[in-house]
Length: 88
Image (tube, rainbow, N blue to C red; front, side, top):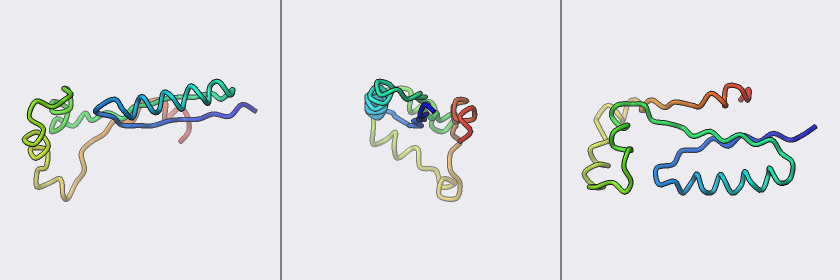
């Protein structure tokens, strides 16, 4: 049976994606089925702030992302459909 690998990642700077793609290539070359899925932040508190890299005003942008309710609740994320199909 052919091994199957699922990489789920988040990246703002695209560095994590580069690492995931490199690992995926190696595993594919060895015969594995590889799926890659990026996590998204659809939460309106973060979506606009993460559109641009590098951030034009990083200190202000990051500090502005820390609303008081964040300490009680996390932001919404979207998991790609490939994760559901993988049965994870």
